[in-house]
Image (cartoon, rainbow, N blue to C red; front, side):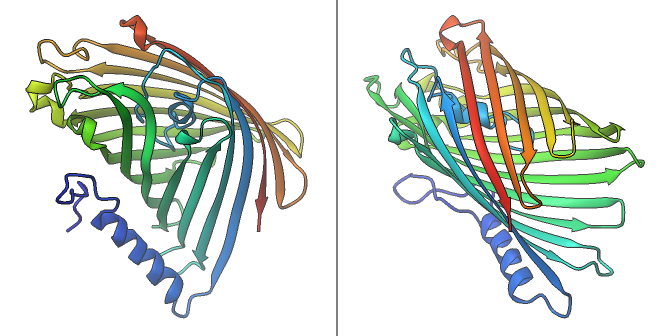
Length: 348
């Protein structure tokens, strides 16, 4: 039986792995090491980007505000918002079996690293493993595990000692995703998404440890041969340990609604434009008197645009911009974040 909580070691700190993660690694190993008589194909997608951000504290949260990423990653809002140049590199290794009576199986492992030029304390990695299994010609199921360890959020005031010291706030995220996709017609594909996750904070903020779940649909519609439209909605609820540790008055439990709309337009054969808009409404549900989270409602708007130009059959160049704005009924929680990027993808 998988234990999604991941558990804690005797010192009280979060364990970096879980039984579910080990299970997915085992699936990957068996798929690659013992493919049997079925022929297989290997591919790899390497990508490198350089990005400019005007707010290093919100950068990671803004970059992952998408249904395919982690749209509920926490962020804090300090007074000073430093800008920086960020180097992002990733590689996605894929192993695909030839179709059998069970359908095609694809196993993917992706690792990404983020290196900040002037603020290296924000450097971090993002790791993902997934298995996608075709059930028939029109239906597939995907299982994914994402691991982001020891992500620095920023300096914050701890409450566990009662002395309100300033300390580094860090979080480790384990997120599992189950996705059922079915082609409904020649032009429409429907997807049902469910997620379960655990966020484990460093000891100074352990009352913020949160388990969450989310679910929602997505529809992809090819309006005309050169235009693809996507619509999606996701509901999520997170319950933090702080709801039962009332002495700290720091319950970050929440409900949130996420809606998104996006379109990809093939302008010419080598040139495409992808645009998107995401709206997230997050309501904190603390009922603890004296908790600064009580009654807080945040609303985040994000717009993105990215051009991609195919240089060859294997190489694509990208140029993008992203703008995020969070409004809140607590003015100290509001922020703006703009990220601009240029990058290249190469498929082996």
